[in-house]
Length: 378
Image 1 (cartoon, rainbow, N blue to C red):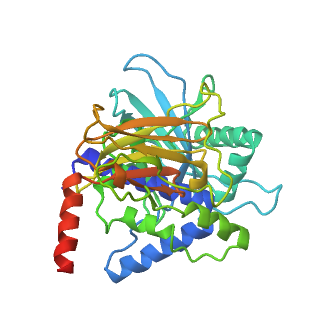
Image 2: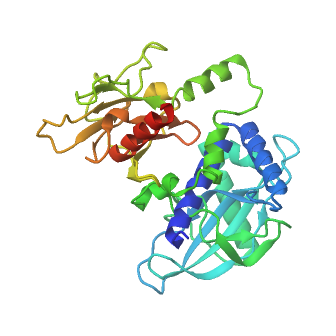
């Protein structure tokens, strides 16, 4: 059984990718959720994923020093159950949760109050596209909190946090009713912030995440030809290092060779001062393969990425092989563990969540596969 923090990391990774899928294509998201529901029904599982309310922005009061200081958070959420405005000039409907007061912060134990203000998804889309409308919507949400709960929220120093939902989830997903105390966290911390191993490597092949990734390649949505071309480019990986005939010779070259598909700029002319190190995690999969996952929020297809690997030959004095990747805005170089076969590195770009995943198998695992193949042929 996974430790609680591992389970939280897994859940965070799944919800983050589902949010990314919804933001890019609500139609694909609905299709995927429907597919999960059908599978769950076949297994006798009720309502496996759907959240009646989903957090989109979290507004926080100004920081106050000391354990006795009062802080508040307002989760600005969306739900299809909230009616949209009748027209462009129509009133915005806001549904309020119950107040969850005196909640202890997981980090320092200081208390805070949290409220949810829920609107139709179309309102959130407008707020994401227009900063002025977003500011007006935030003011509307704060005003609704003050009117509903008889509190006064100080606007000085408020900010939108990195989290999209603060505190325990405040809704009954079956009936859509607000809960007084909340239930398990709707959005645990971002696994890229503190995890020491990739969240994806902790999940089994039959997990939700594995099925989510499969949806990248078997989506049945009916888009136009331009969308099909874009999806094809995003699905170019699984990527492989070109095979080498001599297993002893060093290998150097692009993990993916996409130049023949489209003009490819490897970023050599980019100002190095602009290229920053992206957020990343590394660890081991269940079979011992070394895994590196890199978050690339500014990349939309694998064509944006240039990755190379340099294998250490047995006679080399180098301590390990290295792998490098770069885009127009970031660069990263990491050492590959000595017990892996860098020449067999493979990678894929998960377009839905903008994550590059590189996997390098263990040397003994490769030898075992070769031995099994030889035995099978005999």
